[in-house]
Image 1 (cartoon, rainbow, N blue to C red):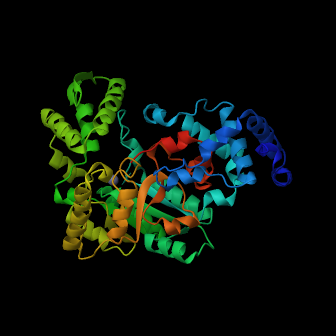
Image 2 (image 1 turned 120 degrees about the vertical axis):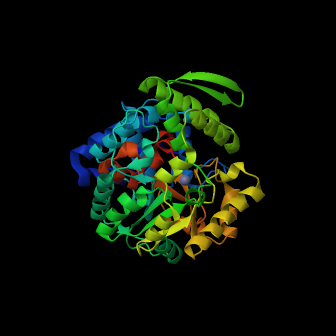
Image 3 (image 1 turned 135 degrees about the horizontal axis):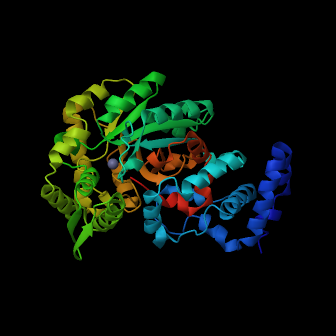
Length: 450
Ligand SMILES: [Zn+2]
């Protein structure tokens, strides 16, 4: 029988107590108690499920050595003591995600801040932090203070971006381009940790609000562009659905399994309506979802094409951004479909079409790629193989995780770390960069947002 982690590695405890004193002792008393209380097979939940095709993000659950297991178990016990109670099964992920987004600033945020306050992330082994991180953003703009803001996770303020850059710089990270990150991975140049900034989809505020911040610090950044947005052939359906619900007091929605009337007069009802509609539509085909959202928008007098023009970059603006030597515009398909839900030919066509439009408008073939939505249900091994076939130097998912040396062999399935609008606190970024939360518990990994 394997020895429990609490007795497996006394030198670690000795070293931590010497180095961190009383706080470490308290922390580890909790850890040892919690560690003993946990059945050993629970440690198995940290491991990548055998035969799973989930991208590499889950691999951080693999805890290779006794030192790491001890730290993770201790931190877990601290959180278990009061911050969260239930670790959801995978089937529970969606409801947890809903309650978590519905109440930003909830237990997950509290847990991450508690970790920061405990200093636990400083105890984390360097192996958890990996060699760098690819940060994911979508929109960067001033908060408008709207009570109903279901897409708020997708936007951060310029001030938070600025503060993050300064804080991450102070932590000793180099800010590099995707090209440089790939070079470091291939050449195993891990002397200093790196951070790459990426922004998905192609929002106008990337030019007006994000680029000035990156220029202030001379930091390279990547915009993954869905070419259908400037072309006017794709819609920002999630923004459209938000407008539809914001402007209605009740909606008659046609789902695949029947129609339903949903009240959305108050902010509370609007939030409930968002989750009722978003998840049920997203569970079906994208075509059906987009058709229904277009119908609802039409009913509410919302012009989808005008909404895209309002929020997304035009080709002229894309060119303006591309002229900045700090910016690189990379591929995110043409229509922003979940590739895994399309048949092989259609998925390839989506990538090829995006590349063709890119080359026609910008005179350059993108070298890097990001999978639309990027979660395991939208991008799996088949899509990773496609990205390799198209010759991309790298491709990123939205799976949470940090970059490890082994990702040199998984350049078509790189995990990212979301700069999430609900977590605009540099202490949380610091804790996430330690890798500890990813190794600790599924709830943090389950809070997945495009
Ligand atoms: Zn996207």
